[in-house]
Structure formats: C-alpha cells, structure tokens
Image 1: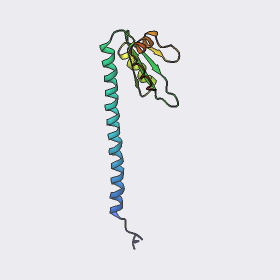
Image 2: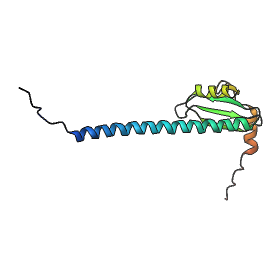
Image 3: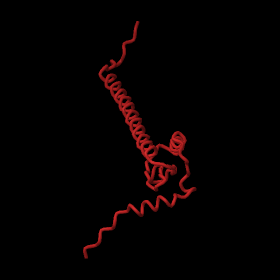
Image 4: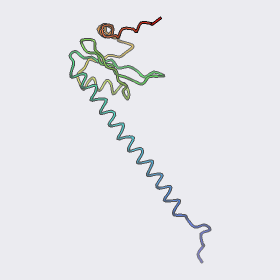
Length: 130
C-alpha cells in the first residue's frame, strides 16, 4: 500500500524560484562584465597618461572613511591625474607593470612640481560684483 502525498508539488512555483535564481546569476555575471570593462578603461586611462608624458611617478593612496584607494600619477612637468582603484595592491602592481617609481601617499610627500603646476593652471577667481 502506497502513501499518497498530502499536497501536490506546484511546478509553477519551482519554475518561478528557478527563474529568480537564474536572474540573480545573470545579474551577477553582468555586474562582473561591467566591472571588468571599468577596470580595463581605468587601466587604459592611466596607461595613456603614463605613456604620453615623461618622468611619470605614482603615489598610491590608502582608502579612508570617505575615499576609495586611489593612484596619483605625476609627470615631470607637474601635470597629474588621480583615479580611484580597487585596492592599493592593484596600484602598486600597475606601477610595477609600467616601470613607474611608486610612492606611498602620506609617507612620501607630493612633489613641489605638482603644486607649481596647479598654481600655474589655476583658473582666476571670479571677482565679486559688489
């Protein structure tokens, strides 16, 4: 004598749950693709800066409570570019891959040439009309 199930299994619910699970997997895969594309774009921007200027050095900045880790590239002219990076190890690896001298921000001061470049390229303040 066989026991009959007390409640039939609803296939619609199982399909729905499976659909939600696959939707989550698809969303995670799409997010990973977007993150990879963003990292490629980040690396390309940094690479373009480093290759188009001479005497470029890198300062890797630690994450703080309100800022992500970042890398600051400073050319010999003082021109600079700062970009957020995934972590400080990524910044050091980037500097090593492109043979840039790498400094730790907060330990090694920013060079005077950066401040000089900023001062020379700062837009004049708009005078107050009063």
